Every structure is written in structure tokens, then in C-alpha cells.
Image (tube, rainbow, N blue to C red; front, side, top):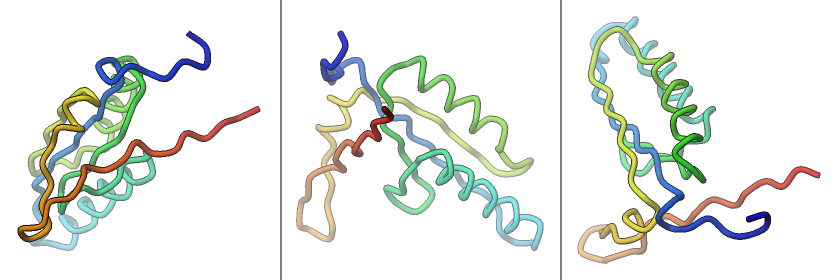
Length: 112
């Protein structure tokens, strides 16, 4: 399997969707920490409060789910969902009425 690309059915996207309160300074601080935590963990913003990360396997997704669970603020709602890369690629994306392709798989960093 070495050097073989991941199957579009095995690789997946972990999607984090959240609705967090921002009425108080503490709420805003918790929101900012959570959002920055997602970015630090390699997530990219798809829309406001919807972030996604491409992962090669379910095992990798489990590790990132645990990372997110550790930074969930005390108030608000967070949802985590995985979809296969194949399913993600079938997403319809519109900017206004103009369709666009879904996000590409991010480049992998190679370590030697």
C-alpha cells in the first residue's frame, strides 16, 4: 500500500459545525479559543461556524475528534460529522447563483 493514494471511500472529511454564544467577554474568549483550536488542528473554514479537515482514515478522524472534544466550550452546541472524500466531492457549492467545485484535498507534507 505504500505510495498508493487513499481510496475516495476510505479517506474522509471531518466536519465541525458549531453555534457558540458570544454575548459576554467570557463567551467570546471561549469562542475564539475553540475556533483557533480548530485552525491549529488543521481545519479550514468552509462557512462561518463550519470547519472541515481532510483525513486519510477513520483512525485519524478518531484522534482529531478527541482533540476537538477536549476544547469544546462549556456553553453552546458543537456537532462533528464525517463524510467520505467521495461524498464530499459530490457536494454542490454556490457563491450567489454561480456554482463552484468543492474544496480540494490539501497538499500533504512529506517528511524525510
